[in-house]
Image (cartoon, rainbow, N blue to C red; front, side, top):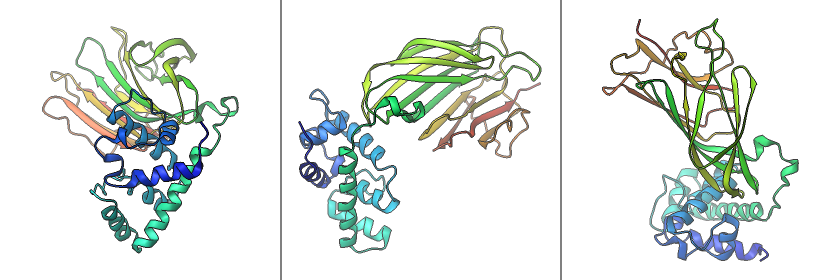
Length: 319
């Protein structure tokens, strides 16, 4: 089935009515072209349809000018501050935000929807000409570091988004510092919890581990998939008091929780953010100290961490 730009545009206009993507029973209101563009299948229920619509639209509008992007997200019910019942109310809200008349906002909405149609009609780039870092990106990275067990263990959950069609493998890597400045790099035990199959691993350098993970099915542009891994330090091997994430590709959000041993709480914990290379090597406390709560945990979030910068926490163990 070929994609008619006029029909797709009309389906997008129809989707803006009522509560937009938030409409109950949204699976009954999505046209055949939008279903094809967003990878919606017959077995998808309402919430799955809503998720696929949201993911494709937010991904497709990422490069739009801010006023055009908002003129798409708000009418479609995808702007978190414009969750009104009717389209006219969302248009009025947007007009106030942009200090423009409703007619201007509607013209911007039309322009934004037209841009969406253009994105949908753009031929998918051949993966043979796409750099690996451009094939997919991380929507959410959620890490739970547990220090209250027999050995340090971290559960890492990632939701990835395909930026081209046919993504069927994910490269995952981790770099570990040596337990002490003079010590040799340690080892890691990695276990797949769900969502992927480990099909290859290598150690390009003494500190860096690289895993090749196979997805259960290929992803097309805008589709998402979640997987989880458990990373453990082998028993008896000490761990340096640091957990810092260095994004190698675009990441929309990173959340880290650390659960300390309540019988061995650290003397101090600090937040690491926008760190440059080697900024975290000497474990010098940063200004942003973090309180450990009553159950021995800290919880930090980093929206839109930048590639090549470091984000996480470090701590000083109690003597």
